[in-house]
Length: 53
Image (cartoon, rainbow, N blue to C red):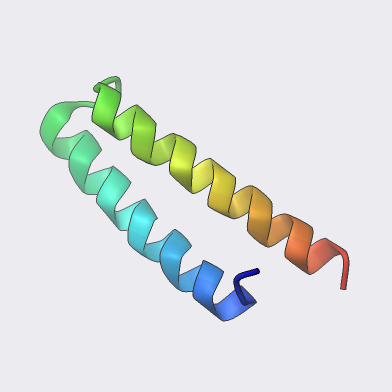
């Protein structure tokens, strides 16, 4: 399992990547949506980790 710090860093990095991709390719582009879905999974993982402790 990933640590809180590791998840935070990955979330921040992926958020930046999603924004950049959305600005270049559009918010409805499949790559932007794919990154958004990965980001959602990481955020859910982080929420589960922080709520149980």
